[in-house]
Image (cartoon, rainbow, N blue to C red):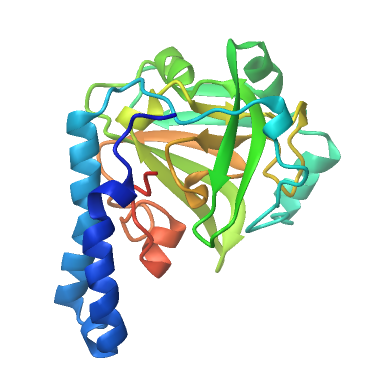
Length: 253
């Protein structure tokens, strides 16, 4: 079991109180000042976890016999763009992961190169904000090793994941901070349940950052970018869902 402080432990009481307020007065929930107070609980959780948790403490991992018989594919099931369809047709032979931003050594890594890197295998639970969970097996290089290879600059605070799927004509994106970027369970998985990741599940690679809710697990990753700030990416809140439906930036579990 992870010994991290969980969202439920830190903000459960605040969330329960907020729920009573919201159920009693919808207008209050629409008030921008109140919304800032409500969502500030995420910042409190983020800061306290960083201050009090062990950087290398792990989320729970499971035995093979505990894996879910079906792992639901959620969100985009196929980006369907001409560029992505061409990659699928050639089995990602010419796909390259672009590593850019605040790095001293920008990279363009092929799928074959990623497969030769030291990798981690983990059986973990995917917890979706919609209320469902599934346990699956993931395998791929640790993001931290890739960032070390690129020689990330000291000023980098976040990693942005640029993805192939489109929402309202714009490429999907997600982010995590550098603390989680170098966590041992943060990997760029190319195997799922001992087979190459399928298109519905995010081929050729997807992020697995196991200390986060499911919407942070970006699929169809085309590039990772080190940055000092979230500003300039979408609306600056850290991801597509964060920008558009006020999901938490951190989303820790």
